[in-house]
Length: 344
Image (cartoon, rainbow, N blue to C red; front, top):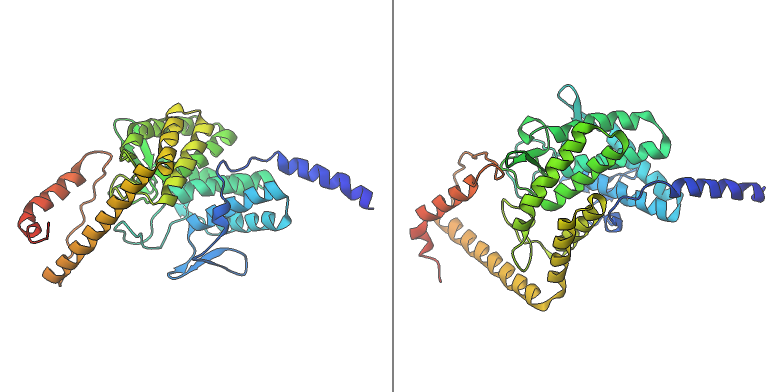
């Protein structure tokens, strides 16, 4: 009896070994420090209470890579639990599209109601396509064909992309105007489209990938401060050490998928920032100075304007113009007399 089992196990392992790993090392996403698992093994956030699609797709892809590496059944079941959650929670968007809107308030962006994330949408494509390869169930593919349509639509029209230049597009981590252009979210989304391209070979999606890569090449160097990086191009927040590690790993993986020499060279330069003392010291000093300035300005603003007035939000896209910078400069000019009160 045992002799009969061995060939079956070998055949199964060979079949699993032929399946594609996700191009990123996702093992860090197996740890869920701010989440718990429900009775079905789905991560949920206790505060605010709810299920976050981005957390779930990253957890699923981490389970997938573990399964392909170890052949352990618990990881296969864990992966499929997340894939089934995506099936159950699919939300229709218009006549032919669907996705997984996020109801959590965004920490950096003004949002009313739920919003889509290209990170979650792209991750869901990668999860559901792999679930189809694993089970051969057509239901996973049906949802993929609907979800991919959100990549063809502007973020004001129920999609996840924002225009860059004349023909470029950037996939937004948060489909909220003004578009923030978060680098890591863009690349995670792009991996989902590459997975779809391998399966469907759809000409429209192939062209969309080319347009997005063109936009990336135009914008990539603007994330570089000269000694460190920004996480986004709207708020221009300095990347944390872990953010920079993730950006480098994503660019290296993208270079491997697309053959992009530009991505590879930028990844190598950013990796050097992490290893050299001078860039790390400049980052430490600059980030602490910015944090101190924000803290001081917050105290001054609270003291002078205890009753805050909510002004209308101007919804503009940084990809189309420098309007956001103009608004900021105008505000600073008008408040110049107030700034003189601050210690120099």
